[in-house]
Length: 312
Ligand SMILES: Nc1ncnc2c1ncn2[C@@H]1O[C@H](COP(=O)(O)OP(=O)(O)O)[C@@H](O)[C@H]1O
Ligand SMILES: O=C(O)C(=O)C[C@H](O)[C@H](O)COP(=O)(O)O
Image 1 (cartoon, protein in one colour):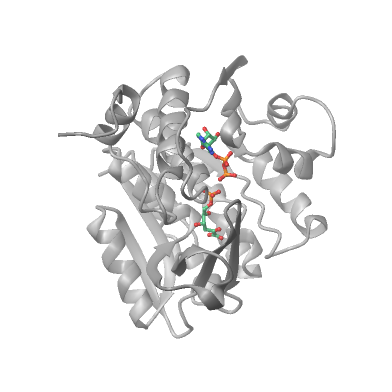
Image 2 (spheres, rainbow, N blue to C red; image 1 turned 180 degrees about the vertical axis):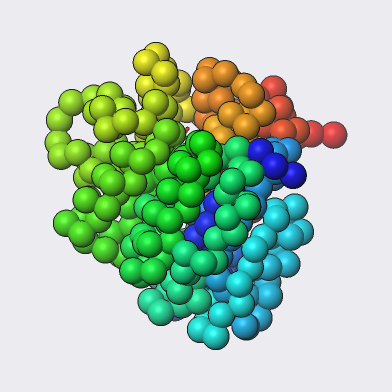
């Protein structure tokens, strides 16, 4: 199907310790998958949109799992099997309020993405090309691939969406800032946290307005439990977060982006897109796991209409 979301990046195996405390005392572990771009693709698919993910995984069991999970979620996946290993994230909750994530991804299959991996026809027929600031941090060729896909989208008149997603464990702010700034300059839709806006622009001022000054016509500032602010086609928006019980904050940003982009692809206006994004972000924090808590449309309806905490 044409006109959907196309995204590319690295998806990893995700080992998550049960409970709270140091990793050595964990009673059990769940094994799932995670990756910012595939989380967004799954999120869009769960909300009824069409989504394509492009990336490399190893010829190993984790690679098999990722391929099966993406297909099972209805994501069109161009999965290239690589001779390197599939990357891994290990996540544990050190204290009730502090989640710790270790990456095992240097030299991984996902980091070996090259421009030729991106099918030109998929980008040409996309409604939105979505990329993040994580992929350019993975390797020189992964960085080239992101910019190559963005240029292909521009050439075809396809909207480019960027989630700044700065990951300090992958590169320094000194190395990241000019690359992320370049990426923002080439996008029409940009998502960032307040700290990420500051990383790209330096301190001071209104983050949405300053990012929009680099060129994007839609800038959305995700601000955790505070909600979001946005500057969309010159109009300011501010939406409060929904009050929910937080189980796992990781994945909220990707759910939020999926909500916004799914509605944008479906032709909804800015206020509706932000409402769906806010609800999707809130829903995601109520679940453990990075992509398991991505909502369907009925999930969002039940969250928004919940008056009781038992459904029967
Ligand atoms: N504790 C929370 N309660 C309700 N909604 C939340 C909470 N945390 C995040 N969200 C929603 O998810 C969005 C994205 O979360 P945020 O933490 O800002 O992103 P990221 O994961 O990219 O840092 C927020 O703008 C908000 O709408
Ligand atoms: O790919 C990476 O490097 C990741 O960190 C994968 C994470 O699963 C998500 O990106 C979750 O991120 P948030 O939604 O911002 O909480």
